[in-house]
Every structure is written in C-alpha cells, then in structure tokens.
Picture (cartoon, rainbow, N blue to C red):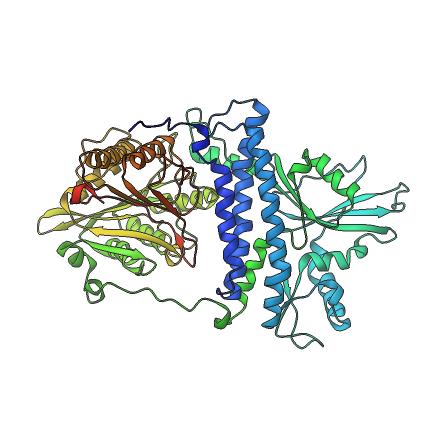
Amino acid sequence: MEIPNLTRPDYFINRELSTLEFNSRVLAQASDDSIPILERLKFLCIVSTNFDEFFEIRVSGLQQRLESGASPSGPDMLSAHQVLTQISARAHELVTEQYELLNDKILPELEAQGLRFIRRQRWTNAQRTWLREHFFAQIAPVLSPISLDSGRPFPKILNKSLNFIIGLKGIHAFGRPCTKAIVQAPRSLPRLIQLPAELEGTGEHDFVFLSAVIHSFIDELFRGMEITGCYQFRVTRNSDLYIDSEEVDDLKRAIEGELMSTRYGAAVRLEVAHNCSSDLTQYLLHMFGLNEQDLYEVNGPVNLNRLLAVYDLIQRDDLKDTPFTPSLPAKLSNAETLFDTIAAGDVLLHHPYESFTPVLDLINQAAIDPDVLAIKMTLYRAGANSPIINSLVAAAEAGKEVIVSIELRARFDEAANIKLANRLQEAGAHVVYGIAGFKTHCKMTLIVRREQGRLRRYVHLGTGNYHPGTARVYTDYGLLSADEQLGIDVHEVFMQLTSMMPTPPLNKIFEAPFGLHKKILEHIETEIRNVAQGKTGHIIAKLNALVEPDIIAALYRASCAGVFIDLIVRGICCLRPGIPGVSDNIRVRSIIGRFLEHSRVYYFYANGEEQL
C-alpha cells in the first residue's frame, strides 16, 4: 500500500483554532439542561477564563509574529494574518453564543430558582435608595474619575480591569469644555453586591452588578456636567513573559520584573458594552491601537469570571452537582505509617475518585519522621496555604535535607511560586528554578529514609500538580512506590535538575526532552510492524493536547497500516481524524464534564505484551 504524503498542511488542524473548538465544547456544557444550573454557570465562566488566557498568550504571540513579518511555521502553514482572521470570526461567534446563553437561559433559570441578578431598570425604590447609600459609603470613596484633556492624557488601563468610558457635555471647573472621562473600578471592589433580604421586593438571593451601581450614580462624580453616555469596558493585554534564560543572571529577579511590565503589555482585545456609542468605541480602539477585529461588544458584564463568586455564596445543594467524597484504597485505610504500606507494594491512586490525602500525609510523615534524612520535590502549582509547603518548611527547619525544584514560569502562578520559593529558602530548603530554556513540568517526590542500617528510597510520581484544590476536580494518577530501580531513577533525575549533568541510563523512567519522544515513536513503529506481519495493532492515548507534528505523522502512518487508534484528547488536537486513506482508523474523543481530564496515559498492544 502506498503511503500518502502525511505532511500536507490540510492534514493538520491549527492549534489556535482547535483551542477555540475546545472552548465551544465547554460552552456546550453550559447549555446542557441535564446539568445543575450553578454548574452550568460555572462552565459559562470557565469559557471566559480560558478566553482571557488565550488572548493574553496565544493571540498576543500571533500579533507579534504578524508585526515581525515571520513566515508560517506550523504544520498547517497558515500565516499569522490568516489565523488571526479566523480566530476573530470564530471567537466572535462563541462570545455572542455565550452572552445569549447567559441572558436567555442561565439568568432566567437562576431567577426561577430564586437567584436574581437585577438590572438597574428593575430596581425598586427601596433597592435604589439602599444602593445609593451603599455607593456613597463603599464605592465612591475609592473611585477616581479622570477627565480627559491635553493635561490629562488617556490613563494606563490595567490588564483585565473593569473601567468606564464616560461621554460628557459642559464646562469643567477650570473653564474648559470636557467631553470624555475614564473611571476605573479598583479590583478591591466586589463585582457582585448582594441586596439585604429585608428590603421591599427583595428575595433571599438578589444581586446587582457593581457596574450597574456605578453606572446609575455616575453623575455624582461629575457634578455640573451632562452625562451623554456611560459604558463599561475591559482591555486584555499581552501577558506572556519574555525571559531570555541565556541572558539573565537571576531568573527569579528577571521574572519579578517581567510580571510588573505585563500588567500594561500591548493591548490585544477590547470588550465593551454592546450599546456603547460609536464615537466612544472608536476612541477606545484608537487609544489602545486596536481595530474592529479586536472589538467584542457584549450584552452583560464584561468580565463573566466574577460571576463565579455566586457559586460559593449560594448554599443550595439542589443547584449543584451531588457532593462527592473520594475513597481511600483499602490497603491505606488501616495503615499505621504509609512507609510500611508502600514498602509492601506499589499503590496507584486515581484522583479525584481516590483521595489525595495519602500524598499529603506521606509528605507530612516524612517531615516529622526522625528516620527521614532527605525530601526532594518538584513543584509546578501548589496553591495558597499549601499543607505540602508547611510540611517542607517543617522538614527544613528540623534539619532535614530539603531540595525543591520550583517552576517559576508556571503560567499565571509565577508570583505565587516566587513567594513559595522565598518561604522555603528562609526555612533552610535548597531551591532551584529548573533548567534554562525548559519548563520543569514533572511531578515527583523522593524521600530518603534510614531503615535497619541502610537507606531506602520512597517516591511519588503523578500526572497532576501537588495542589490539594485541583486534586479534587482534576482526574490524575499518582503512584506511591518503594521500588528500588524506580527510586534510583528519580534520584538521578533530581541530580540532573540540581547539577544539570546528564543522567546515566534510566531503568524505568523515560524523560523529556531526552528519551520520551523517541520511545513513543518506537512504540508506534512497533505497532505498525506487528500489523504488517498480520498481527493486531492497537494504540490508546489519553492526553491533554496533541500538537507535535512528528507524533501526528507517525499516528497517520499507523492508521494507514491498519493499527486501531483511540485518542482521548481533552483540549487541543491538531490531528485531523476521518481523512480517507489517512486517518480512517483513528477515533478522537474529548471528555468534558464535572472533572477536568488531566491524566496522561499511553497504551500499546505490543502483540499481547501490553505496554503502558
């Protein structure tokens, strides 16, 4: 059988457009009537969070490529201009769908359940009176209206902040005409205000948006002027950190500096109230250096993320998923110490169905066990007030050897990770920041313990972060083991992270960027050879994203050879299934639901000697 050219651009889906389709699948959950209404609201907000990151990182990167005149580099061979044009068209469709869903389904269904978001046109006299008092007592004192003229140029607008553009008519106190002003809402102000239930016409769960309150009483900030318009807007800026690891001496200090500058990076998107006057909209586009393609007119709050606060405020189990309690493996439930249990045999945990508590307990036991000499750990995301950090601090203060590799470039957790690094260093832990030019993304722990006169290694390897919060909502695997060869492998990887020297041949671990990619390709080729010999070939892969062109081409070759391939891809998938003669034998599924599918698992049939 002749194998077609598997590098044709039309055989690859553009990664940015695939990201948008992933968000379309998330948005579909918000319209699913079988899902409790507050969970549907959460999915609606998740789309906004995803879009923010998408524009801050991916779209900003494309705009930089466009400005630099860079040639197409992806396997789809689309230019930056082509991708940006297609992104704008699809993103506008999704945003329109999102706000229609909010206004036509989510908010009415919440109101039917006694949860109201009351627009200012529907306020009762009692509600308006209370909100006016609230405005003067809690909101106006922290607002700073900025009239725009030659002496007061357009202010710096913070990334993703809530702002108002005000149209004015009249003469200001110093005798000059004033036509425009900006009011910025500090992030310290809650975006949702719950009305007191005792107010006439008010229910137990009635809310108003901060933007509606500011809009209603904006004239109090511009006495003597006529308000011709007041419209909320929000700008999204380039938030990608640019750190040349080869040119900086102190990575942490360089990242701290970059974090400050990204607050005012280049604008990439403008969200504005749908009824904003054309002249004010065009003025904002001009001031931010954007065009119509970058403009998103929305019928509702410009930042839907803030609606997530309602989920925690409302204690209504009937409007949420049934509470879920993770189980504990039987072999761990009665164990006096986890070390004894793990020494007796490996323990595989499947989170969140099985509890993350054993991992926390292991680190804590290691911190206080006098026989534990060293704890080594990689941290990507740990969360605020992490019990793991508390345990590592206690271990370091107790004089144990504590080595922590913290990834300072974990996206949007950079500042939090810098704080964690400082805290650990102050406690006496040795902290390293990964390898220049690479992200340290592996999740592993090594505990060295003295037992009966010799040293024994205990390890934890996981697909998820050492974050108790995400462990409750992400599906991940974690392995607890005292296997000697595995312990030696993990030891060698930690030695590499601290010394940056090459590892000797490893026994059971394949490490990126050194051997993992090659090993996966070898497994795929083995399935192809087996099918050529009349045997069965089958590949199953569960992964976050599938982007790498060589892997995709290898999967196409396997499909052409007759290997059955099942892919479970949560997010981006650049492989195009269903191409006749190319990907007929490839099935791609994406699981979107209550838990975020985060585990990475690769299965190869290997002629019955299954490899995992």
